Image 1 (cartoon, one colour):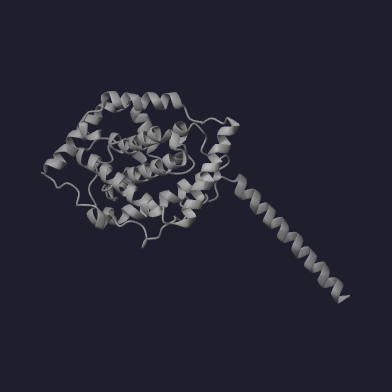
Image 2: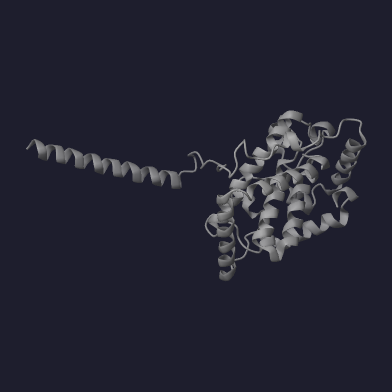
Length: 284
């Protein structure tokens, strides 16, 4: 009898536990008030293996220098792009959260980049974001360069980010680093589109100048750190495996004829507008 009672009690516990698990799963899937999935995935590199920006980069242009005068001149010139389609694209490019950031290169690749359709590529981009953040952190923390909008008192294309950015070093540009790293890697994965991909990666960095949150020299050195990060990533076996998986995935999505979810005509027009109005040969 005692065995039956124990068996009955155990059976009830299992039923209750199953119900709790199912209910919790439904709550996570359907309750937007619950905490989201952590934004950053672990990268392929560590703080010890990521490129050291403090060692690799020179100090940012000093106040009163010719280099800083050029930064300021470019900053003043791009103010003409406020509230244009190129400004709107810079606003889009400012968002490094996923899934929004995954779409930055979808028009260039002419495919949707989503967790559902391209899970390996989606994960690859997220992990590289973590690696580039590690690569830029030491120089950012060392120099704590003041951002343009703090000095010129003009608005940015990302007002909700301004409080954070005031206390985050401007040099080098983290957005430029990750955008250029993504471009280099995607140009390897899809070499037939390499020029267009690299042009979009360059534009992704220039969005930060247009947005009034970075100086031109921040962006230039950000691209350098993107180069350094990608060079280091190629020595990681798991990274190379994931690149091959992403390559196969892109081919499969193209075979299905799936198209990007973004307005690619509007994006192309915005990029063309900037090239026509580009204010300085330093952007070339």
